[in-house]
Amino acid sequence: MAQVVSIRTIAKIGVAVVIVVVAVALFLGPLSGLWEDLSGERISAWVKASGAWGPTVIIGLMTLAIVATPIPSAPIALAAGAAYGHTIGTIYIVIGAELGAMVAFVLARLLGRDVLTRWLGDKVDRGLLGSQNALTFTVLASRLMPFISFDIVSYAAGLSCLHFWRFALATLAGIIPASFVLAHFGNEAVSGGPGRTALAAIGLGALTLTPLVFVAMREKRRKEATHE
Image 1 (cartoon, rainbow, N blue to C red):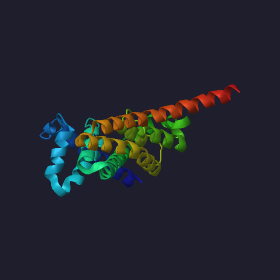
Image 2 (tube, rainbow, N blue to C red):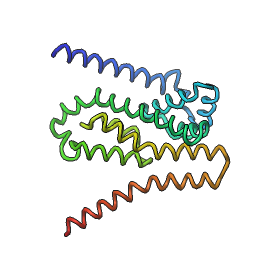
Image 3 (cartoon, rainbow, N blue to C red):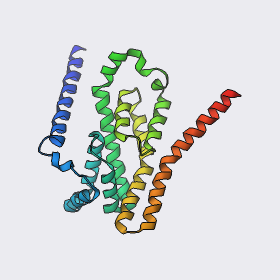
Image 4 (cartoon, one colour):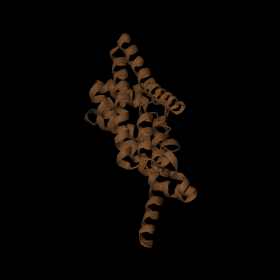
């Protein structure tokens, strides 16, 4: 048992060291210039220069943007839509976002869950925080709301008791609509169709409002049932 604990501790330290090194390289070291003024145009140029490796660039950048919170993911998604169109662009965005979310979840579970449990004890999983269904719904709803930080939700889920497969499925189901809208928006922006671009923007707004309306109606019904 002691040997197993020792191996887990070494693994955690190793992962932490890798994260620190990568973070320093990306934001303070020789690679820091890559992320300054990151834009869809710049990413599109990288994709074109990569040729057949373009999809790998999109997926890799999306994954990195989720794991490394300060890196914006929206320009990458827009560039994917501009470079590969609605459908294929959406697929690349979803793959990258899903991989990034799973990596963030595993990192939080590996490095933070045990610490949080030792610190808070049973309190960490009380109430809704201990319900698999409630946590799954929370992740799914958050994925449908573009203004909620994708990265923070992924790390927070890793700190909770949510099962990995539930997190992965909820994330996958939730990111497809927003990914399609972003890819469509990027594609329409490049094609120069202002009317269709406006419709894409309206669609993104509707996608954001729909979960809020659903939650509000559900809360209203709950209050009405309580009064009755």
